[in-house]
Length: 318
Length: 278
Image (tube, rainbow over all chains, first blue to last red; front, top):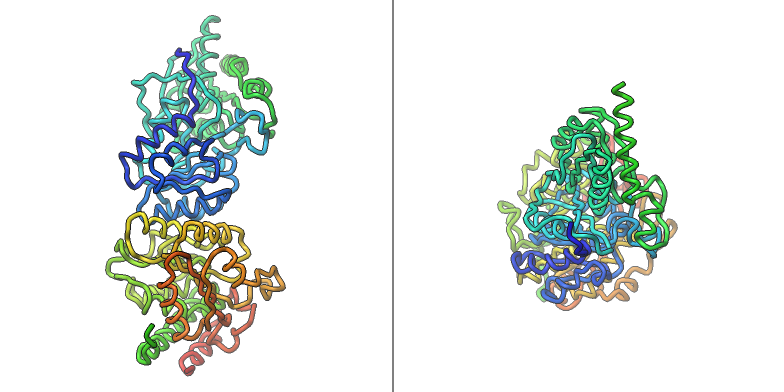
């Protein structure tokens, strides 16, 4: 694994400039956080196509809807908690209901926001966006996938939510990785258990798989970066192969990837599903790494979850 | 500015009468809906669709068309009636309002019915959408104009003021809002429920050019729309003083007719009154 660390928001800022060159109809909106979301890069290159809407997220989403109705491809960015929570009704009624071509690209998702604490740590954004008809939901695993996912979002028609993070995170995917919208990527095979992971937890899942490999447990790692539409086929296939399932996400265990996987498997192939995620509580201040440990989102937590799933499988088998 | 011609005014008055009748028929057939705020904005919407807006009903997505957004989406019947009478879809279809499978949803839904420019109904959102269209028009160097009809009760929504601030900030001279100032909302007079007054001062303070008109007088309205086209560097607001339920004696000024449909007997009475009215 490479040692290089880049934040997904930095990758977003960079790819936006490239996309701005390729797509003259691309416009970008931000709510006074352009230096943090990295849309400031686009603003520098294309000032006439950048709109700072001030600290007014509801109006930003509505304005993005109007720009889309007039043929533009708007990317609206702010922190995930404000994008999806503060402006939920605007996203629901002005963007998702008519199925408009607006890309909501939100940064600072999850508890790795760190020291700012619970008000700024979005733990429910995937849930909010996933429940809206017409909405596509993408959680890239690293900088490589972010660049490809943002490009795919701009090139598809319809509303899309992309969840990005604040801290620099390991680049785990190689340059020849190809993001496919709606497809989960099997990054590592294994017969004893499977981890369906998203975002920064893909890296933790890899680490957990290496730890268990030493103990003779073969763990598959699947990157479920498109959370909606969910790749049901791949999820059922790997549940069947391993019959021990773990989900891992930096999000509430309610309504996110864990729920989505459990919904599919409950209907199509019931097996033990252990969810690694934030267990129905708000975040708090601390460094990102401290918080990942405190909230049981570290490598050890994934290892323990895998062991529990494998144990459940054998219990059921007996 | 030329004085609007008498003949045009007479035509618009006749058209307004037809649209009022359409509204009553639609609501009676649907058995639910919002007559009060539909009737108060009949002259505003009629003036727009039959004189002010640059449109091609046969080509509803024509790129250079003027855009109209009904931000107070519960007044959908007045929009649907105007679109049908202007030729966007058959007038017969008006009677499908609010029925299963109809393109005439309870509140306007974009992408279903030709001429509907945005999905509205959750109050406070239309002005932001209009601003987006206005900004896009400027980027594309197109000279279309965007009109947004707001309710006075709707002005209690914070998003309206976010949009007001942003439209002035971006000097959206191609954006005009019209306020249907009928003074009533579901729970009572707006000043008693949650006063948004003084409206003209607030809009001026937010950086808009403001004009007040009699919202049932076509001469006033056409003159104001002409004035708005001349405001180049700022968004413009036309505050239209109106009467809720206008044109039907038992609905005029009555809060109870905000959101209930007339039964057939009352609908017949309303249609007779509208027909007899000057």
